[in-house]
Length: 210
Image 1 (cartoon, rainbow, N blue to C red):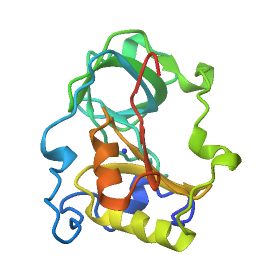
Image 2 (cartoon, rainbow, N blue to C red):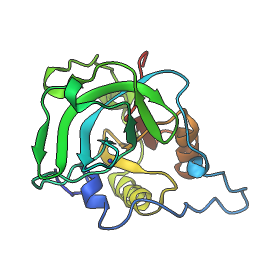
Image 3 (tube, rainbow, N blue to C red):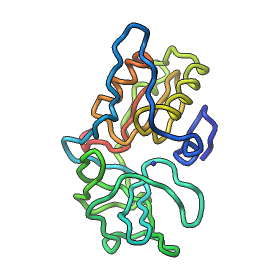
């Protein structure tokens, strides 16, 4: 939680080489620093669903990898803990050594740090998510920020954002940044730091009504 070229898709694997977390962006001169949205976990008020790789090593808790997965065998990735996961209840899992993994859509409740499974997971190969049109991807709604500035912000976010940026890419004059879950606080933070309609936060865990 691919290609490492910053103008397209930065995976978690690529980000690990430079670090994901800690530190914050400087506030504008004379302004009061905005509290970092990662100071407290952000829970979801209702059930959410996410798509990713579930991976378990030995007797450790299974993790839901919502970002990049290292292309090795077995694969390597990390993510929030899954509570109530049962490998016996799902198809499509692989095992190599003490590592078991598979790709699923998982529905559950999010407390800010872990996801508790509330419905049978669905193999991603069989999952048909509802398409959600994003107005920021509409060519008629092109952003005003230059590509060079978006790439600069992209690098800054992956190096020093006070929250985990899973993936990011530039498109249609915007920088899209996928985070685990945002209730609006992360978007407000990004608007404060970089201006409105520059960086668009997207939640990997989405509300069922979204």
